[in-house]
Length: 209
Length: 196
Length: 98
Image (cartoon, rainbow over all chains, first blue to last red; front, side):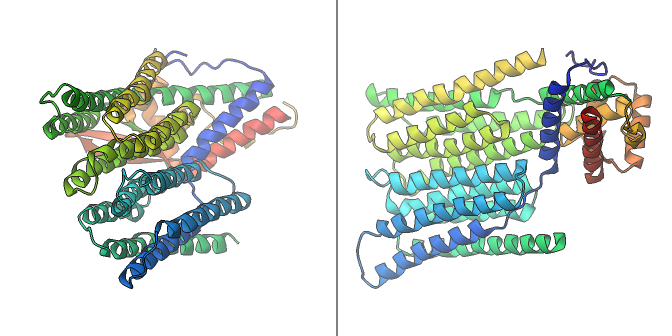
């Protein structure tokens, strides 16, 4: 079709018409930008990470030394199982939307990246254990930045600056307090937003009912 | 209106939408520019190390990345003067690459200067972060091959975490060509073709 | 035409140019007047009349802004517009399936 002559349509058969309909519906769906999300992953993951960070901090401060890697080896798979379960449950309840799919891609990809950095990075010593938290902060910053744009909620996008600044600070904190700072970052920039999202979800569902 | 006209109406709607999408298709220039800049930086490190040349200097990166940011920002501003049309997908892709750029700049400049990250962790980390950007982009484009590029970046990142020598830099440079510059050219040529 | 009532089709959208405008705006987030003009190949006056009609139906929203000191008029679909377009497509589907 040339640039300006789409005011003349061609004919076609009924089967193709249904394909056209499918295409048009997809575009309409993309325009709606509706995301139905309950925020449970945000809360669950933040609690898991806080448990990991605080237990490492407390064990270290009390002189209980063992390979803290095992704490994470238990917590992270639990997080992944919960996330997958939550996605399946949400999909059963609500039709999937384009924006919902994008949000899923953002957090799925960020999760994969953080798992690679946290579990594979330190195996050969390429990544120092203390560097995992600040790198995770930087990845979280990116994920929040994009999420804010997808759902068009400014405050959510602005959390990225908190994560990026937190990450920069943590790159310079070489003591065990780094774990405490990370736990606090998790609480303010992940647990609280998760609770806000969950409350909004509940309100939307009540209004719909 | 009979059913024949209804079908024609649907064809018409689809054509308008496709035509509009073509007008704002990704031209791949950003992918090519950043891919070549990072490739040059990595090669300067590699050749500097192997042949003991003075090219293995952080200033090479400052110049290359600085140039990349200036060019990117200049093209963003110049686009403001063009015919104004904005799509949701383009807005998301901009935020993906802007977010990735900020993250990579923090890791590349601030993390390394803090001493927390050593030089050999840089390439696998960048590769892992790029995987995130390609995965989201692939979802936005609804394109399997772009998502496969993400897999390539992640697998490359994992492999590089185990290669603690200068060969790692060469691998990263080759990945930059294969998983960034070449896809950039694919975007470029397909957008040219679409425009025709 | 079987028993389908064509009058069910939204009059505001059911015109070649306005349908093109709605389809254009559904595929982009917002578009400037000149972009729409080029795409639908209409004169300034003609396009303005059709855009006005869509605006009056609250299907599109208009934003005036200055870019490089030049005034630009930017159009985007409203939620009502998206719903109306969706309904229009659904009516077409109904017609095909008759």
